[in-house]
Image 1 (cartoon, rainbow over the protein chains, first blue to last red):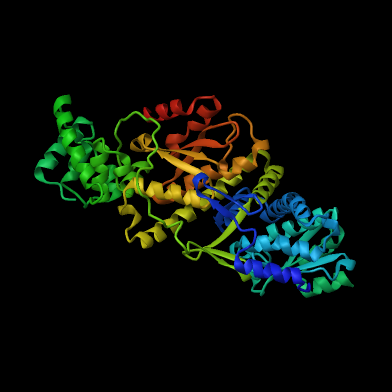
Image 2: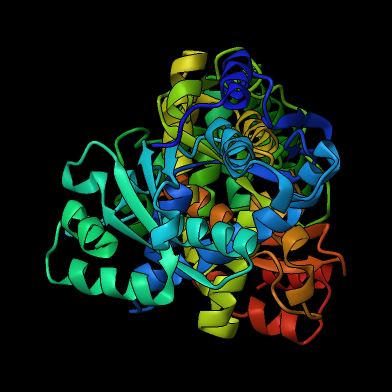
Length: 216
Length: 329
């Protein structure tokens, strides 16, 4: 797992004290904005369940559509956030400490109710980023018969890292809380690697086995 | 509420005058009819009273109905206020829903735009401390009742919109509408339970205007923009809603074209909320919207009563004209 830096510890303290990118309420107009100025709404996790049901009603596979939505979400988040962070920090995102930048980003996501993550970038040289996610919002509304349910997150992580690396990456959830796991596990990598992981997953391989095969 | 002999006579006179004599039969069967029996009951065929006597009776009954609207039983309130000309916002919430669901009659009144935000709502339910709770270390937000909440940024809105458009083209709006419908039903179920607990009074016993005001507060508290309800179409079994500052049109400006439904999320949420509340299959159609999508109007009613609305919107008919046509149908 990624080592906690001094900066990320500070972020954690900020989170606990409420000094994060939490939405401010502008009651007179019925509009919420994050502290960085992005329009937002509050919604129950019914939004995710409703989205899944709306797609399922069309007879199509909701997993693929939600993944695409998540991928585009990640791209939009980065298009909004990266210029702001670069302005705040005074240098480009490529020159920043990646862990610090990602922790800043997820701090706002965590404040927004999307769970707590722990990215592991130690296997970057093998072309794989591993992410553990506790309390996924999507796992709670996934179908009972699914092995994984957090397709929006998988797309989000792929979209974010694709933006940051300027490479077309893919993501896959390889273990999900919906099956009783402690947390949800994702991998992000090249299309080819994730394609291999997907094939292994479809054959019934468990997360540990998939990661082991990818790294070796 | 107990209807006295004098009131009852005046009420019968008035209802007869308004060709709603079917209610006469109900007065002697108060609180014994089921909704099915109520719907199935036939008009008595009594002769209408003259205009003058009806007007006199109306004044008395209006005053009586208004005084008693907060304490009378749902069906009684509906009967009195729909027959009389009392403000629909002073009906009990349950009475309004009966009319909306087509299970009770309505007065023949001309619609007009008039906001009804005169009631107090459920106080400070959405602004009181503790409505939204944050569990920082776990990345969880919950509302007072324990439901998990999420902050959905415009980035996610755009992602969903683009992802669905890529997959479904113009049918994406239907997927979003269904999503909204599901959200609306669940939201209404929670509000019904939580507001009753918070206020100590079942929602069905509150004045309709009070509940509508609370819904306006809920809408704003969630950051979904501002909604306001028009009072006049309520009496005809429709709800006309104006939504301004909704998040989806703001995110979707590039996908819009003239006369195209621009806020399918709000339409779905509204339909879901009122379908759940009225226990009927209701629809919500957008009938107007400015070019920026900043302000949109919707009409909510029974699906079969609104079947012609999409065609009227496509033909370019103005919202006032659509409402008028529906009210006189």
